[in-house]
Image (cartoon, rainbow, N blue to C red; front, side):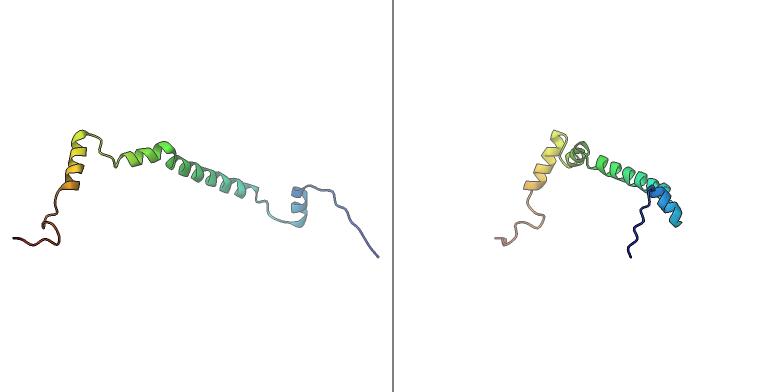
Amino acid sequence: MKVTVEIDCTPDEARQFLGLPDLKPMQAALLARMEAQMTEAADRFSPDAVLRSWMSLVPQTPDQLKEVVGKFFRPPPGGMPGKTGG
């Protein structure tokens, strides 16, 4: 014997009939929170923000550039390594 039952209902009607909880409000809240976090992360890593953070490392004035280059070519405080006096 074979019995076929066809039920025509919406997912909401099936959920209510089976007594399952309605998760739509929780899903909406979580999706809104995730969207806010993703938007914040995208703003942090926008090309403009990345360039601004990189450019803060580059000397902005000629005096700063001179100081950086001077520090680069200045001999170490203890003299040249491997050389002995004389």
